[in-house]
Length: 508
Image 1: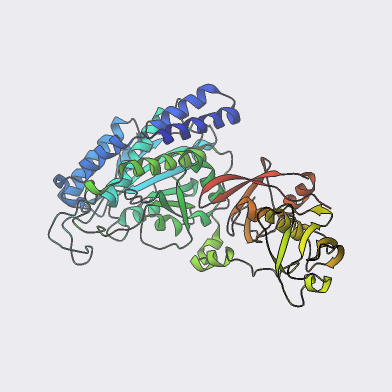
Image 2: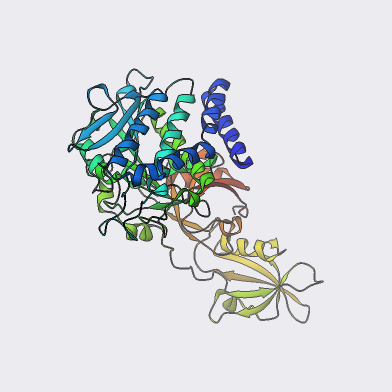
């Protein structure tokens, strides 16, 4: 295991130790988290993607043999059968079989609810012109599609079993058959569920998680319930993956069967590649360490949803959203006009102050009488020490202020100036979105502002200020006056949480 993974897991355990108040719980979670490992994942994929199973086509000899192997894995791990008539299998259409096992929840009330973790185990066999990108007639082993997802699911079963006590809600593990035949298995289950489908609080779809590149993972479905993006990002602290949140929802994998039944879902995916639906999708191309990291994130997400006192219901508005809506939400506002209207430069060997190299026509600076070559010594009563400080001071100053300049002849003058626009102490604007409660989505970061110097960017999400999670923008604005000096913001960028220190100029 990578050293970074161990450190992340330890940090997560300590966080839980503080939150839950128990060292034993933290140790158990750490052990469960670390039970997920790439050698085990590799072993599962090697078996499932072996020629023995002839590409695992649903209903075929190889597909049914793979089903027997996987049912045995469920049994060996002590999952309670959750198929038909006390068995692991749910048979349908004569030749197909879903495989289902459950861990009963520990809470007397919440155990009637379910977190579902699913992955399809079938592939396309020898390939046809309808399901293969060629060449056909050769075994398509489907190491990534979807032996990788099945391996991840089996490792999540192991991790849950490593916990000293089951989570509050029950966890239903499902291996779908017939995904490659128009989602037959998941469609059958959602039409003939073995537990009440209305009790499923979230359905995970783990499909093709074996080809992670640059630590990037695609996440679908965060708009199907309120607050899922922040939930995912907080759990991602232990894995620190780069998350690409997708808004489009297509009928291209088993999550869609749940979407049509108004069940919140999350799909985890590491992207398509040139071996997709080809005979070359073999184990030697799998990123096993990356699959381990994705599986660890999946475990933490499922565990969090299984233990939360309350979960969000399906958000129907997601049916009317697409990638274009995401672009609109994260679009940058137009740049603001300059408040002063000057360019400057520093000169080596000079004392404090900056020399003006350009004064915009009809700008506040020109109207105040500033000239090229002037040395700006003071602004708003503060000594001009460097460019960053001056930019912040100009943006944060009240509209009416004063400047001290030294002319080329050495004469100093104090000049009044009427700055353009309103003061910007932080230099940010934001939008709020009902699907992301407790989140400010930055729509503008003014160049040179305290926020810009802190490294904030458009589309960053602000989650907390000085360790305090925020409910909305109004609360954020109420808290700012209580923080006269530098303060910390917790932000999320592409699923990764960061802490930045913002050092605004003093409030006037």
